[in-house]
Length: 113
Image: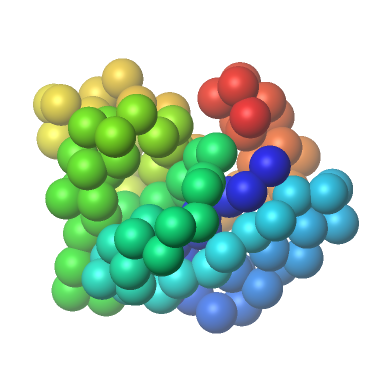
């Protein structure tokens, strides 16, 4: 499965990419929302996206709206309290940081990935 990972922490991203790729996935890591939009426009077909909510001064909600419109499954990851999510994303899959890899794999499975 091809996974788009939007994560601004290089250490976290390296761990997640290594774990997912060792399970046979092809993970593309991007640091910003702009990079994520570019990756989506590069004719790369993704099966699912993992979106860190807070990326420095920006939030990933515009990207999440776009993914919903194009029908790409996604999950949020964040240390932010899930009750602070915008109402339109209250039902979106959410993995609270810090998470371990077993939780990540279980959440991806539940997402249908």
